[in-house]
Image 1 (cartoon, rainbow, N blue to C red):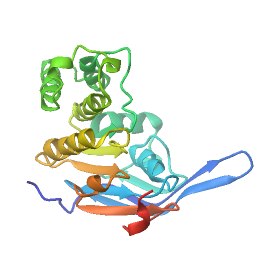
Image 2: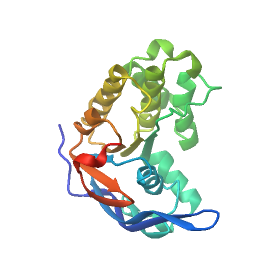
Image 3: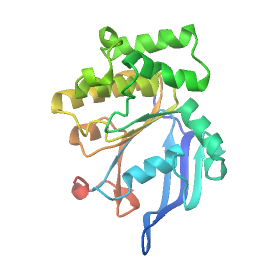
Length: 236
């Protein structure tokens, strides 16, 4: 099993994020400093509304920071265009969400092939990788089914496979077990360990799950938009 290296995959320096509401500006991230090492599994906990999803969105380039710097693979994404951030996300980042976000009009196999098409890598090798991943997550026999024909656990396994099909270096998972029962949650966590650890991928996972915390190399806590060490009161 590879060990995390000292070369950071992602760096946040003094990151702040604010949203303009009807009559005020609400700051949800207050000067976040964070480094994710290559091959590291980091788990992020915190109460609802503490800023966890906002941090994921800023780190992935979905949102821009209000202040501060976001470095991905040595490149300053806080100064990058939307087009460049999208390209970085498509090629080097895998995203897993609580609500699966599978496209309902595409089969499970087509959902996996779409990221490859967007990256321009939908060739024979890409199709083979998609089928291999579906086999690895136990869905090879369901590849022609549409998402609404799958259980919640099966949909999340498909979402994990989709997040990995383009071979990303960084995987960001926002409450990936939040809508699953204990059995399916355990299966998804096992997939992260089994599919990401051997290849030295980096994982940042937002969670409320005590079991999910056990797969992390370190556990971080967001409290009122400030990042600090894990405390017992972090779980909502």
